[in-house]
Image (cartoon, rainbow, N blue to C red; front, top):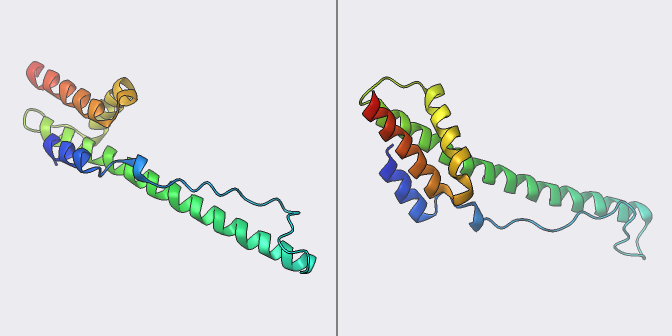
Length: 129
């Protein structure tokens, strides 16, 4: 993995969480009555099934969202390690420190800015060391 591949992935939208459809169906209140002609038990079971489906959709969204974020982080850490290993031996823990710093400094400007900041830090260290 290298920084150019990360830029390509960003351009393709591989790390874009904005393209995900956020489930916004609210759960039903426990006393909700779907059909007044049905029994209370039937309505209660309907609410339980409906709420279970809503929870499942939200859990699936969260899982996918987290996997995209984790993919970006892992790819960038791997790129930092690969870049820095030309000059020094860099552990994953140290690469995570660089990632965390770059993320803290630049994440409000987007992933491109985080990658730019990480690359800038790697350049600085490789020139100093």
